[in-house]
Image (tube, rainbow over all chains, first blue to last red; front, side):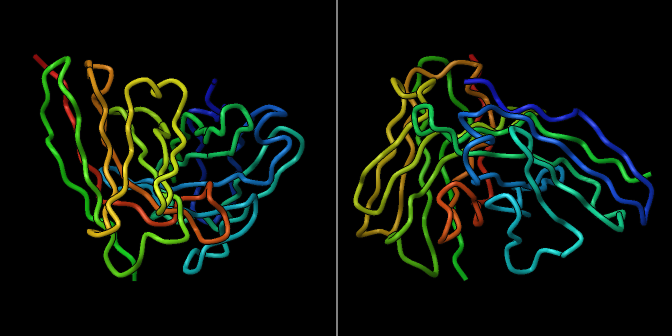
Amino acid sequence: QSALTQPASVSGSPGQSITISCTGTSSDVGNYNYVSWYQQHPGKAPKLMIYDVSYRPSGVSNRFSGSKSGNTASLTISGLQAEDEADYFCSSYSSISILKLFGGGTKLTVL
Amino acid sequence: QVQLQQWGAGLLKPSETLSLTCAVYGGSLSAYYWSWIRQPPGKGLEWIGEVSHSGSTNYNPSLKSRVTISVDRSKNQFSLRLTSVTAADTAAYYCARPVRTSRDAFEIWGQGTMVTVSS
């Protein structure tokens, strides 16, 4: 089972908005609203930022938002801040073998 | 506030068995599926498998032949065993609990255990 496809890196200046894409197939992202996004700082455990495509856990800033169109999910971060610099991973339920898939990760650089 | 505390051997030789345990503090095992996830150095995340409070399991097909995840309700813990390890199993291993309403979104994570396989 292939991982979900994410860009290796994205960058933006403080205050700007960026979007990270996550492309899957009709067996995962395309047919299920079980897409999650995680933020990971170096040496730390991942932190859940978005689940079920667009829901934010308690305590997560509303600068983070999620959406989906077809087989591609997206994470948008508005009003970029220096502390947003991290790796971001998407995840989706897959109907193939009840598997949970992750993307390869995207490194966000705040310029 | 639920917390996960994990432990286990950090250095293994090829062909040995990886064994990690995750204790749940501040909450119960009930009503959730509990997962193990790993991350090779500098790479992405890989879901290993999950166990329910009653012991039902689901595994990543790529690891299924070598993985056992079990639960000990009396100790409020769950464990991972991975047999016949190789260098490809070198990774940070995390235990995790999903959000209540979505089994596929991991809200609470253990601190991680770096496991290195080397002769």
